Amino acid sequence: MIDETTGALPVEGVPAARVLDEIRGLRAADRPTHGGRLFAYVYDPGVAGLDELAQAAYAESAHVNGLDPTAFPSLLAMENALVGAAARLLGGGPGTSAPDVVGSVTSGGTESLILAVKAARDARPDLAEPRIVVPVSGHAAFAKAAHYLRVALDPVPVDPVTLRPAVADVAAAIRPETVLVVASAPSYAHGVIDPVAEIAAVAAAAGVRCHVDACFGGWTLPWLRRLGAPVPPFDFAVPGVTSISVDLHKYAYAPKGVSVLLHRDPGLRAPQFFAYADWPGYTMVNPVIASTRSGGPIAAAYATLRHLGEDGYLRLAAVTRDAVAGLADAVRAVDGLRLLAEPESTVVCFTADDPGLDLFVLVDELTARGWHTQPQLAYAGLPASVHLTVTAAVAPRVAEFGPALAEAAAAARAAGPVVLPPELLALAGSLTPEALTPDLIAGLAAGLGLGAGPAPDRMAAVNTLLQAAPVRLRERLLVEFVGLLQRPAW
Image 1 (cartoon, one colour):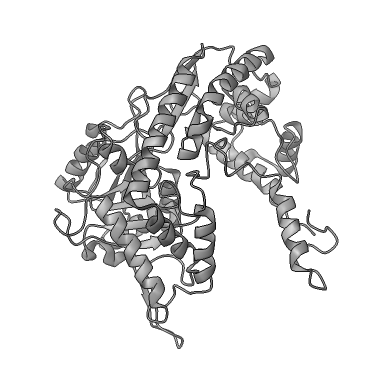
Image 2: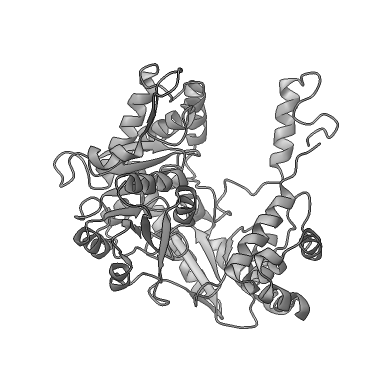
């Protein structure tokens, strides 16, 4: 643990071995990043020796600075190699209908999406109030991009059965001020692939860019297609697709954080850059948001791709496909649970039709048994659900998950749904974000077991309260609750 008397900056330096012991002690409280029991946040291929290779490559380039590619050509070469690999995998490069694809390596999917929006916005300086069209199943990072870049967000509903937007609704949402239309391949929440070809066609007809967010599972789709899965067209082979983002720190199994943003041609990418010479220092030119960038993540990603190769990714995709099928069968075998969507990528998402089976309690029961899943709140007619991000490392655990799920469901039924005090539910349903006071927030947090330090082991009551609150109030409550957790150690 951290020495509470000295914190991160002691008067006298601490021996290296002791510092590492402190970090290991802190890490003991984390969710397990390996072993196939964590269905969110991390991506584990279960490949022996890959971590050590990536760590060694990271160390080789940790102090290389991506600010100036002329000073560090090694980093430029690795970035170009990663962009080329992603472009070829996603339908671009020589001999394709998109031979001039260019791209940039970013720190993650959120940065890639922000830059895709920036490039589209800055390509239309004539528009005083640019807008983007995004299905409600599109990643929240698009809303973040719209907020940061002062671009209006036009959400498009999704069908409650198919979980996809209707192409007609996308077309109707496009206005003269629209600079970008978005499709997901696949969506994060449910793992389904939007009708990319049709969405790109209506965007092209309107003269608007179309971005395909393939950050989450897009790296895996081409391999699944090679294995015979009916993956619909979603990449640069689709006319009208102008940019694609794909995260290498997800299903390319590189360490955090490396993503690639691709554009169909250099002209489309040009507005993404920021250049500034109107000051006495060095002339700044940045293809991405950050200026100084460590070469560590890029070198680690390069080493990962080189080591696994096409045959490795094909094998990992096959293992993951089988794990998805096994987990889906486990869900089908439990009375009261229902798949929200038939799996078509690397996600298993399920809900409960039995009112006596509280999904949030079920998630807590799974956690108590060592299985870490991701609850998703009800939204706009879509029920609450449980999201499982499936990686290759999950495969050896599939046989264990079915009995654990059945046992957790039985325990959740026995415990019954979370019952919050009626006055608390009424408050959550009637409060506005502006009406929240520090005393009210403190009282709510205390009642839910939240405060300084780690979050409680069981989160069903917190999720139940958040679900009862309107969306804007949910956001404010989450900000305040997380703010209580993030306090400096004095």
